[in-house]
Length: 262
Image 1 (cartoon, helix red, strand yellow):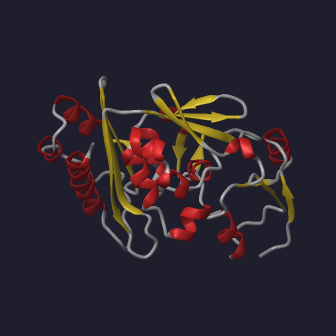
Image 2 (tube, rainbow, N blue to C red; image 1 turned 120 degrees about the vertical axis):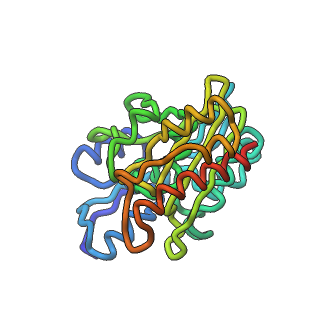
């Protein structure tokens, strides 16, 4: 690890100012700290958001659940509010990494990092969530822009995420056994306006599977999902799975998620 300066930010504004000056913002540290230990990252200065109480917490706002950016995965998994309103979101959080990761990793850190195999981005996208920052509100469809990239600008920090409450939803993840990241994960959500389906792990960035959405909006059943042809074009291919295998997993995991949705 390279030498670096550490600062515990007292407010979001202070953290944003430091970030504009070139400092790296630290949320749960589940990606940043390992990359620093391996000398893959040399931020020079790290600004910790952990002491900012306003960034933590879960509450119901009308027909949505709003989760503070610094709320850890374990708290989302254990929340009675989340379990009651969006049980699929609590279930997703309960299967991220291991207990240590769930106790430290945060919602805001996960979506700001936008790992192509992370679980939370699929929930944000499938539920049509709104990402709140210190500067604005960003719709889920506009937030994730590519591998490890988002719409966040210089000095812009995620403060909370608001998840609309669906009629039904579920998340089905086919895990890479060593990392427990999603080889392919599919989050499905049914609303009065139709179905939304978001896929993680299959491509370089989380994305919506439009053909599945059309089929499930007409008939929210596993049979409808199984009838959709999923193209292997643009799918990831590596030592763990070919592009064709991942394309098939999209169909399989969508079918399983629909069957489990409640």
